Length: 313
View 1 (tube, rainbow, N blue to C red):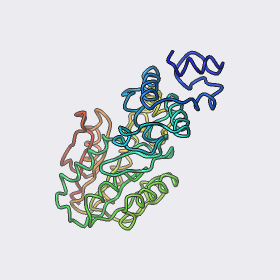
View 2 (view 1 turned 90 degrees about the horizontal axis):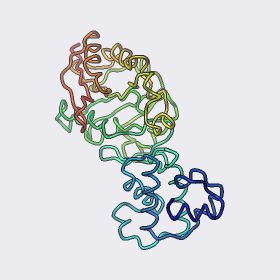
View 3 (view 1 turned 135 degrees about the vertical axis):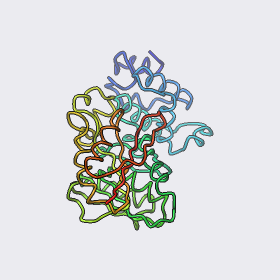
View 4 (view 1 turned 45 degrees about the horizontal axis):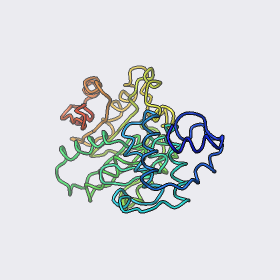
C-alpha cells in the first residue's frame, strides 16, 4: 500500500487496493497536499497495479491535463495547486476504472491534428494513419482538387487529416450517429477546415447521390464473438456499433464494396481500414464488385491496415 492509500485508509475511507477504486471519503482524500513528483510516482504505481500499460506516461498526461500544461511545461512545474490536485485525483480515479485517457481529457491527437473526442465515437488511433499515408501514395499531387467522402466518419479524423494535406480538396463525412456527425463538425471548426468539409448523419448505402475521387472508411471490423475479449477501455466505453463487424467481421465491407462503384468516379480510389488477417478477404469482395486492388499499406506494427481499391468504371 502506498502513502496515499495508507493516509486514506487511516481515515476509514478506502479499502486495500488501487487508489480511488473503493474510496468513501474521496473529497477529503483528494485534497491532501503533495508535491508534483510524489503525485506522479504514486499515480504511476496505482496505474501499474491496475494493469494499465505505460503507467508513467499516462500519469504525466493526466497531470498535464489537470494543470493545463503540456509535457514540456510539466517539467518546469514547481507545485500543484489544491484545485489541480483534486482534478488530477478525480481523473486518476476514472482512469483506474479503465476509462480511456482520451475520454477523460476530451481530446486526442491524430496525424497533425488535435481533435475533440467523446463517447459517441471511436477514439482515433495511430493505426488509422496508414490510410492517410496510402492516400498520399496514390494521390501524390498535393494541389489536386480532390473530392473526398469519409464513410463512418466518427470524429472526422480521416477526412480532416486528408483535407489538411490537400489544400484544394473538399469533402463530406457521413456517420449513422447524429451525435458523431455533430462532433465531427466541431472538429472541423477546431482545425480550421469547416469551409471545406460537410458532415451528415445517415446510412452509408444511401447517404449521397454523388461520385467522389476518394472514399475513405474505417468500418466496424471486429468479429462479434471477439468483442467481449477486447481491452476494458474499448468494450466498456467505446460504442459497440462502431466495433461490431458481424459474425466474421466482414459485414460492413460487403455493404461498402457493393456501394463503392456508385460512389467513385472513373479511376477513383477507395481506401479502407481493416483488422488483422482481413485484407485478402476484403480485396476479394472488392474484385467481386468490379474494383481492382492497387495497393496495401501496413501500420507501424507491420499489420496490413489499409487496402486501396480503384474503380475502373
